[in-house]
Image 1 (spheres, one colour):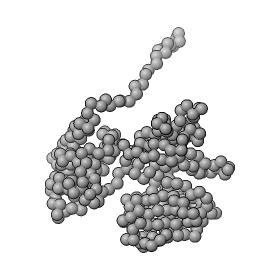
Image 2 (tube, one colour; image 1 turned 60 degrees about the vertical axis):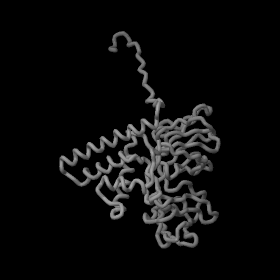
Image 3 (cartoon, rainbow, N blue to C red; image 1 turned 45 degrees about the horizontal axis):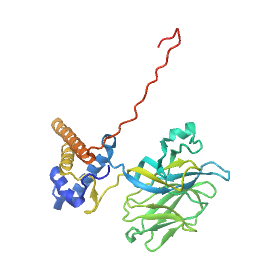
Length: 328
């Protein structure tokens, strides 16, 4: 589930403000902090409520470079999770589900396909600072969408053409691309200014091939990738992901769970539980958290209606006959 009776920030502010004892016209920034804290609490309780797990993307299968392989065929097929997706719930190839495996699977058993009867998607152990790899040794350039971000600096750790680590510093400009003449072999990390107002785009300098577009809330890009079988995918796949948390700021932004009673219970939980060692206040805070959870469970049940929720696949125990002379 993703949205449960959603409302705008403008509608949620007075509800949260009343619960924490603040006034919207005087304490709006502080109430916004509580709204984001409330949303983060819902995102963090994923194991309990399974919220925000229906983000869908149709992704192209991409060729990525395999580290420490000098042969001509030094690539693998896979996809990078978009920056609004934290993890993968399911992957489909032409409507057929792929079997998802953790990074442990490949390191111990390989991708493991047999005549394309079972296609696997395996999470890579490494994380990456860009959505796409550089195609060749190349210089880089960066473009910013907002002129207010001009003068802010982007730091990029790279391996240069000689394979030595180096830090590139790009000062953003408002009317074009900030460029570097240093030839890059690999991008190790990207650090973006946290006070940006707009997105920035990182690309190869020569041909303009885009490597990533970073939204304003992203400061340290850290993308996850999945490897898929080379000969079994049809060019694109459908990925169902778990939504990544990002803060909201504007009056028209959406609060995903907008039930007044749930917001109020969360506000009371913060009001009595934050920065206190008083036993009575801690007990009151725990009760409000329990109330919030109960209300949220009820709201989820209403949205699901009569749909049957499948549980985990039962594990069947196989009993074997013991050999004579051995204990069962």
